[in-house]
Image 1 (cartoon, rainbow, N blue to C red):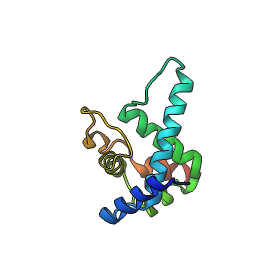
Image 2: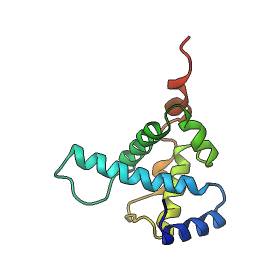
Image 3: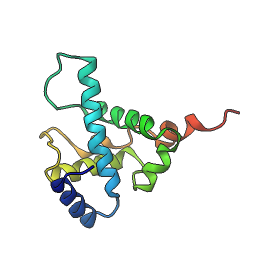
Length: 129
């Protein structure tokens, strides 16, 4: 699952910022890989690892739904992730910890209120009236 240096990062970051479980960081890392792979397969001429916040948030959403289906909302909430703002906090904790690379144009605020978790992860699975 996590290599030794990533495990050390997880231990450090979750001790420093207890809002999010280690699973949330692992999920974000896996979702980044998923998103980059998906974008490259859609556009084979795409090079480099930089993706936009919008692309990443869509990838996070798609990966959560593919991975967890109707329990995505519950799993994310269990990890302390309740909004796209939380994804931003996790991403920037990972950048600060050297686990992700950011650019000078990246801002945590770009993740704020991008979509409703209830609308995206919960509502599609509720019974129709």
